[in-house]
Length: 116
Image (cartoon, rainbow, N blue to C red; front, side, top):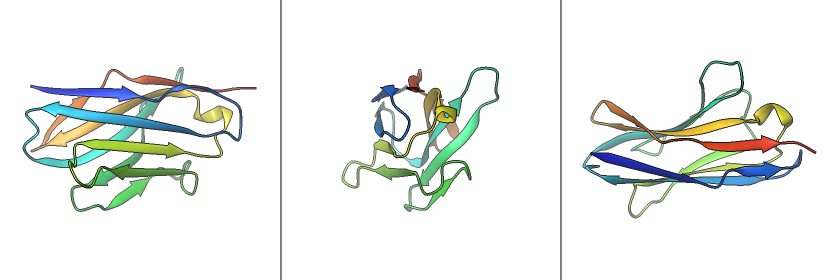
């Protein structure tokens, strides 16, 4: 069993910053990749950023240059998403996703609201 605990969402003004965290626990023997997805009201899920076990990263075009995904280099079971220069269109529920030996696990989601 794998558990994902997300934290760091909230309300922020346009141009502000937030940092999301996701801690994986349980049967996490081989993590292939960790990622953040988001779902805005009325829209489909969108991959925001992903980091592989080797440290490779990829980002949605909409967040490139503003968001940074990183991982705890010691334990490798915690992933972060630093979000800068936030825009109202970044408002969504953000979900942590972990790929463990091809099986995908999801967190419960954390709300990010960007509004003045």
